[in-house]
Image 1 (cartoon, rainbow, N blue to C red):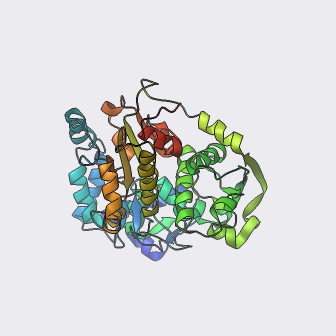
Image 2: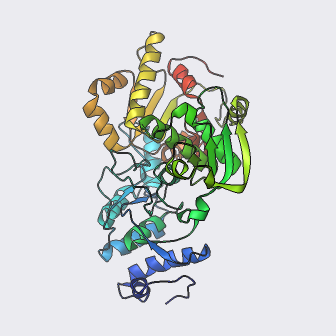
Image 3: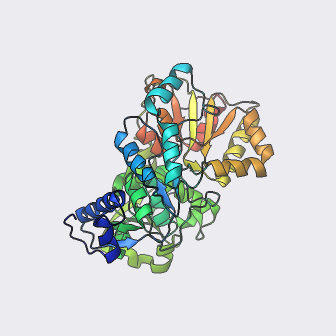
Length: 433
């Protein structure tokens, strides 16, 4: 048995001794060694049994991943509580690809996708529609309660669970999330501990109108990096109740703070669970201070580079929904796009437009609002459940003038960021500087 620093119970020691098989031993050994790096004193029980994995793509180069999954499948091991997964990388029906692009996707980038998904289903993937970075949406079902201990990865899901739902999870990496779900324990350190959930920063929002969530999150992430911010002044714009609109706003703000920085938890005064309960007692005595006003937001926005190969290219493809859109946001974007086109006396968007959302959210949208879905379809707008970032990994699409309202996609790809109002103008064929 390996040397370890943390205290283990009798069940955990038996697993490390190999009494539940070699595969279980190696998974727990990995969790223990990982916890020792961060001086975790023990492993704690996962109380929200449904996990969430970040590794959703069958890249042939990930041979260790497939070998590990093969061992798990061979031993008949699975996550009893099930798990959800980040989005699939491709959707040819709703995101146009030429023959060469498909060859790269199918043969080089994601050639193991089908085989890998079969491995995932055997290991406990909830179902074939459980592919979304927003697993916590009500339609998706993987929604923990306040205080739950999770074994999740995916930065935007982790920050939402910690901040908006009040659950507890560290930003795990690929496979650690699965190991924790299968074993049922995770190392206790970081954001699982009360003392590490206190705020290192006070962020004072002093804008004259509601800040665009993605830009506000970007400003926060760039400033605080991995620290915990306590945000004041935002509740006057989005209210003091976590309704659908507030959750959507915090979803996008949190995703931007997690990708433009490394935020795993934020508090919003008078709104998020721990801030409502504990108030300013969450703020550390030596907390730093950062004021975000209109000028600061504009400074952050203007700092985003234009990575297009041809800087003044005509916009060709837009992705909206990174992280995936909620049902509420699908309706909102329907209204923005359709009303914008009507005002300009146009019937179709001027470029390829893809709204991305979870498969189960898309099904509910079509079932409940077929007329809205038809409006979008007639206007040339597609709804897909892919990961836009995985699509932009293809070097053959780097020459396309792709644009987005997602700070996460902007950060990890060559996509150009535009504000929501400017995106609607671009759909109508207008020029935006």
